[in-house]
Amino acid sequence: MLPDPLLAVWLAFVFIAEPVEHASHHRLVEKSAEVHVGMEPSQVTSILGAPNAKYAKRGFFASWWLDGPRPKQWMYGTSFNLDYVMIPYCPWVNPLPINLRIFDYADEDLVINWTDDDQVALVHRPHFSVPGIAFDILDASLFSRDVLQQFVFHSHPKPVNGG
Image (cartoon, rainbow, N blue to C red; front, top):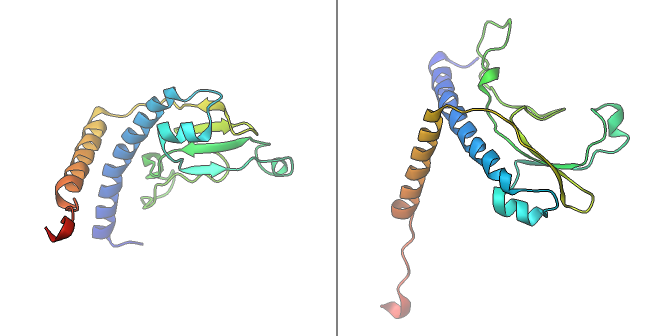
């Protein structure tokens, strides 16, 4: 088990990161309204970016021990889930409240089904709410990132002809 101070810092990070991650994911789900049936992978990635995971088509044999056949799918989702911090009937806090997608997707995942011709067949958009303060924290973190990129990590142009 982790020492209490280290666990407290880690859980503080999780409790701050999870709402920010969900706010970012919520914006991605709203942006997915631009994705429609018949689009190609390059068009989808230009709108949503790269998916968190890509799953190959699940055939007949996999359907024996899993939830049946599935088409090729892309998944956009979050890593942390505060629903898993407290495990029922367990006296300890779960130090890794992460979404494990072993057999199925998390309820809040954005899932895109593809045809065999690599065109969008179906877009499953989740419905969830995020507290307003999570969007404020997300905007502040994005602003800080942009300022650091612009002024701190900005590479200066090299002089031409020794000038």
